[in-house]
Image (cartoon, rainbow, N blue to C red):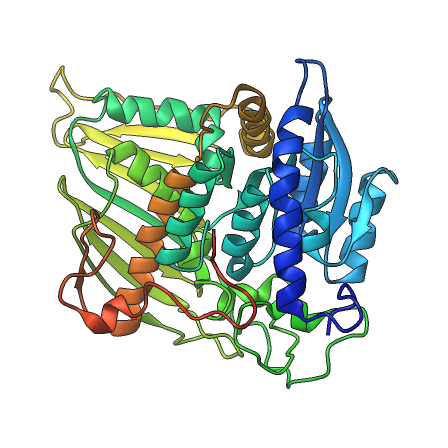
Length: 434
């Protein structure tokens, strides 16, 4: 039983009570929202570890930000977040209590992927705007529910796909849209690095005294604590994430979709596995996924051994190629038609500090949209559609065959086995109820 529960009160009852309180608070909160352009936004954060610490520091560095609340189930991470806030934020160990904190305008969510949907839905229901890390969801069903919650409660929900707000990414995508490299019918995206031999094979242990592991698991299947089932390395376990497909794939497939102007694939095929790395992880260390689109083909590749390229994204057009990374972009004209006066010329743009500024631009866009009530650069629907690509890629890989996709119904036609992967059961008492 969690410490937050009252004596003799069930967790389900407590959740219902909290729901009533937070829905009631939503109306009051709307009247207390930003009264003028010079007022500061009151911010909370759920999940203050590696990535959470980064976006927390970035957000509260804004002149119009006021840190008011921080929550984590791991005491050292929580203490660091409180220190970063200079003693201005109240500590919480149960995110449901943080969602009742007032006044508060918005909440940052940087928990592991399996928590994103539930926490975002509950935050929207509480009348809060949300910045939620990518990938938006763990399943297709979760992403759709998150989008519905954002629309039902009229909340601004920004997916943490910061490349969407990078000036050089915006410029690069516009060049693609303008036909600078001709018609694009093939895009390759991927991630390479050397993670050999892996992250270790520790045995199961009791969780540390300062880590509420049961709350960390939350809606996920109850399993014995293992040092790798936690900070950062949760990404390599299907219960909590989708490996590099939903880690880096969620970034570069997002920009590929944007450049191509596509909302969904038609057919997805994939293969891969954990072939070389010897550790406790489950997700692929080598993976190839092909997406058949109306306009061509998108390829996603992962190699966690002998990697030389890092993260990459290349648009192949009829007149040339455009490669974009977090440092900038470059254009290369087709070699065999070099003398054609209509061919694209080679050129590049690598602005100083481009990579370092991505988070700031993206957070600024979120703040501005909280004020204006406009849709942000990586609106929840955008994050959902990108996550669908990632989830379908993993489903095809795990089934070792091709699957079709019906974007209108968000289902895999005439394929009960594959459709079973579009959602997952949650451990009591956690639900996706709006």
